[in-house]
Length: 55
Image (cartoon, rainbow, N blue to C red; front, side):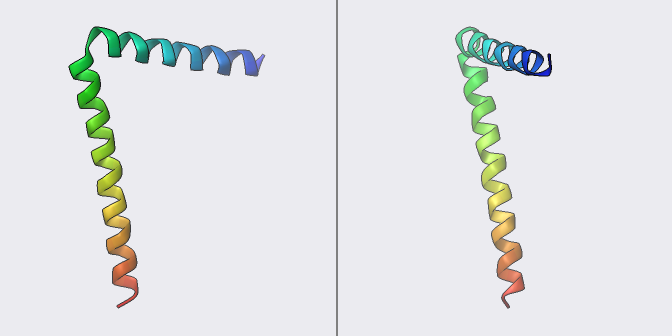
């Protein structure tokens, strides 16, 4: 039963992502750009942390 629920949730999330991409391509692009920016910022902070450790 749990596998069915997980699979259903994945299908719903993918369906929503495709719908959002097709109906609001600018919004979807901004969301992806924001997410990638957050990942880049996090990576930069981690590198700053390790740089400070090595001093």
